[in-house]
Image (cartoon, rainbow, N blue to C red; front, side, top):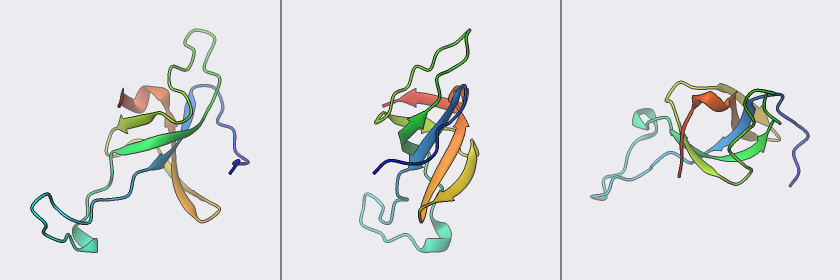
Amino acid sequence: MALNIKPLADRVLIEPAAAETKTASGIIIPDNAKEKPQKGTVVAAGKGTKDEPITVKIGDTVLYGKYAGTELKLDGKDYLIMRESDILAII
């Protein structure tokens, strides 16, 4: 599915991973205690600035800060748009 959004400069559009519903030991986590995910997939990326080109590409799984980016909703899905510098690592 193609999105009708193109991030500018060093911005990246990320689809956050689903929040964990169960712990490793099998305990079910209630909705109000779920942690905000810090992992997601790059859906779109800008071209970068003239000094620093974009290093992530579409399809990369990345880790980002807990409060990084701006949340937005497109076509019923939640996304985050953030600067590439807010991305901590590519997995």
